[in-house]
Image (tube, rainbow, N blue to C red; front, side, top):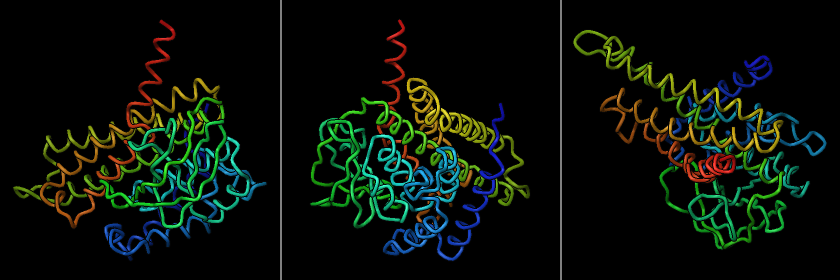
Length: 337
């Protein structure tokens, strides 16, 4: 079995890196906090133009007909740049719910055209049980996507919207009027949840990889006692630990990206939950270690290291934090006992 990315996927990865580099060179990601959404809109428009928002949508519904692995390649590349776009919430979580849980076909088509859809979660960003009250990765004018009590994906006009001031200023949350919601019990809904966990894991992997690259670049350039700080063993150990976390995150994430679509649902959930558990905690550790390597500059408001850590905390919390994936894994073990 061949585990590396295909040639097409490597080209896809390179394309996103180049587009992001071009956009963020003119408008640094930190500026997105106060630009009224201009950078977010420009990058999202480019993703729509490249047909990357509809990667999970079948071609006959206006999408690119790609795979979850393709979408994870994009999510990781965007995470590496701390891109302020709702790719995980819209192009992966909402699209997967609409596709696998029998959502309206016209909504999938609209999503591919760039219409705004936000997946709806519970008050603690968990999978909603009775009602959904928070729009994740929300943008102005977005419609909400939730799993109805009868197990089908439904689309809702969001009313009484109340933006939440949260840890991550680049990926907004919004409190909405409660929407009826059900648990993911059918296979389609469970597969959509596995896809959301995996998409978040890919974005978290990108955040961690970006922190590693940033730390390495700084360690090569910053000098102390007339030597680059990267020559000191203590700094080398920090960077080696970061590399281990990043490569492990990448391995488990891309394994989950295949399983979530193709494996039997029990296996898909097991691998996707493990990916979400590991990458969330790992991304936070790597981003914190990256700030250590950067030293004083890493804790300034002007540097983007804190934005990377903030995004890691938010995406770690999304779709049930550690609790939902670990409870699922624990339940499987206890069922076999």
